[in-house]
Image (cartoon, rainbow, N blue to C red; front, side):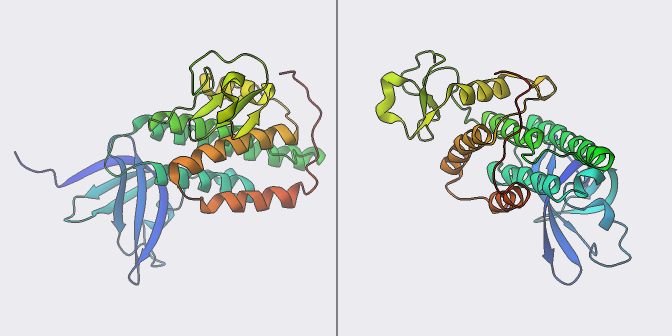
Length: 282
């Protein structure tokens, strides 16, 4: 059987590393080949036809030649470049965070089509939220200092990415005894993989409020478009974020570079942690 010498695929650019004087190694997320690395030759030259189509977070149609060690990008055409997302430092950093998560969790050359489509959906949602935020601020000067929608989007992505790579968080039943969790003060353990009932409180690493567990459950069982657009207070958003951070940190055994940058941007915009009034009861 003759070996395939080239192939075409759509891809999201997750990462770039300079190589030599003019080349780059790009890390790509594809629907059928999973996460792959490829060489983009001459892409750093001002005259390169590939450069604009291989920017970080770009969704592009690529033609690649099979190489001995790394495949080579021979053609590229940008399908979506998410300009509104990239015009907002916060939303762009959220996109970089999603890309770093995918890069950390996925092994190369393992098909993860659901992760690819999840990533694409989240980039489109971030782009839409960035556009809406910019429009509202231009029209009436209002903005959400807590970035509520995009923060919920990050938590949604984290939960569903963990599920896709075999680490589905336990938010319906106790992660230790498997008893159904009731609407009461429960706890949480990253080492056990989720929420812990009061009977197993000796395994708690932190308490988990009724509202936080409810939000996590909704995010886990819903399609993104069906997630309510809550206005959550800062303390609840922080509680949910800490739960997911603990889970991610446990599985990755390291910190993510973009996490600290997101925290810095959030504190710059909302240094006092002011909460928005609730418009929908949990």
